[in-house]
Length: 142
Image 1 (tube, helix red, strand yellow):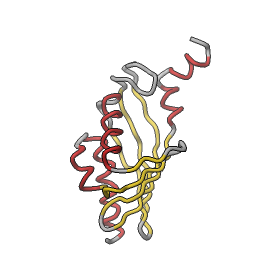
Image 2 (spheres, rainbow, N blue to C red):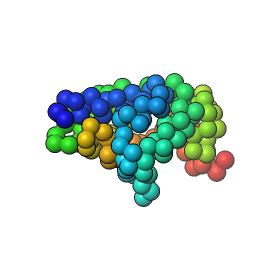
Image 3 (tube, rainbow, N blue to C red):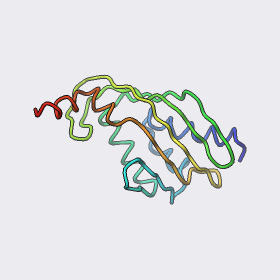
Image 4 (cartoon, rainbow, N blue to C red):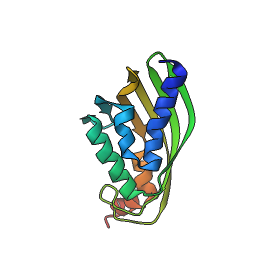
């Protein structure tokens, strides 16, 4: 695949979060895809992606992810995006706050045979919790 088609595939993966159309996960991700997060756990497979997207969309039903830029080289695409949403459902241990959040996310996708086979994601989860007021509560013992 060309670098341009790799970028388009990575952009389509990002768009699934905004649309919530998890049927597209099967078209974008390889069945044995691996997701590396900042925490030590590694998730494998498309079904885990579907669950994760659904959880985020329950917490932030109006998710909007806007791609700021992409860089492609070889079989990898780096996407820098802005994540925005209003918390209407449970996120982590935080119940609905109706607060709007915004954060930057960096996603690195490795593409093989026209599908995403491996992903690394870095985002400021603690910054989101702080925007929700969760860290202030924990910090003050409430």
